View 1: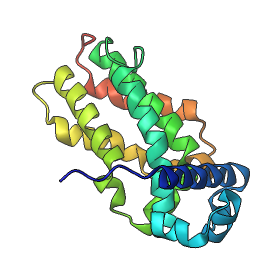
View 2: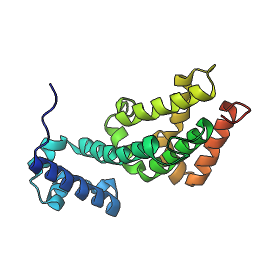
View 3: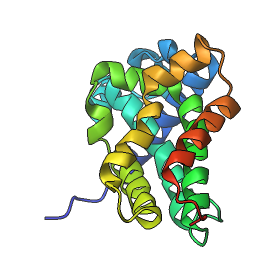
View 4: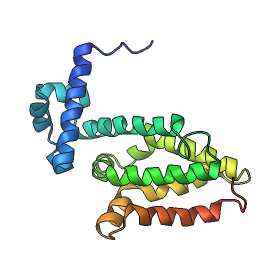
Length: 194
């Protein structure tokens, strides 16, 4: 049986809560993301926030999902080289580079989500999409290779703890991380450009 459509007032409240939470994260980081404060900023009751999201981790995953929907749209329908119409090698490189930007921008939220449930990253719709897309491109480029394994290997550098460590402790810029991924891709790509 299909899920009932969201009531208009519930949709408005969800939007208000997510907008308030996003503003709070932008202003002061995830440490400012207390559900009582989010409820106050969204002008809803704290019970509404708890019923809707369960806890802070649920709210964080909802924030990440909104951003991920926009990213998936760019990958599936945006202009090349990230979107369709590009050659597989160009598209894979553009995809990994876009993931660097997304991971660096979202690293505080991703760290919080991972700390609440370390394996959640791999059960999340975001990782499922990233893995399927990467695997499909690898299979096009290297039909002889284990595309599923190589997709996991190419996505491993995006673990939130590693990205945060590289940026904060290592002083890595997004460009440096992208250069490193380009070097990984050199070993994967066939000699002719796919």
